[in-house]
Length: 78
Image 1 (cartoon, rainbow, N blue to C red):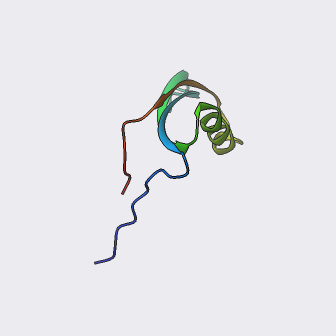
Image 2 (tube, rainbow, N blue to C red):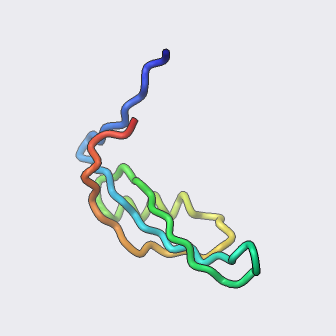
Image 3 (cartoon, one colour):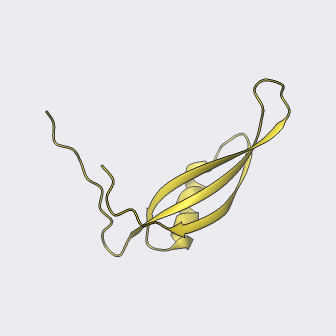
């Protein structure tokens, strides 16, 4: 059995929960539909969360926006 890698925030970082709304379309009928995604981000502050999400979402075909950034109580990620 291999050892599990544990992600622990360091260097002043914290985990943040970032909610992103994506304006997509319903695959069944093609009508517009809003999807909500929740991203767990390891960052120093909300500004760096926004920067990381923007870099990650760059090039997506649908429009999107960040609707919420909140510090998470999650301490470890396995």
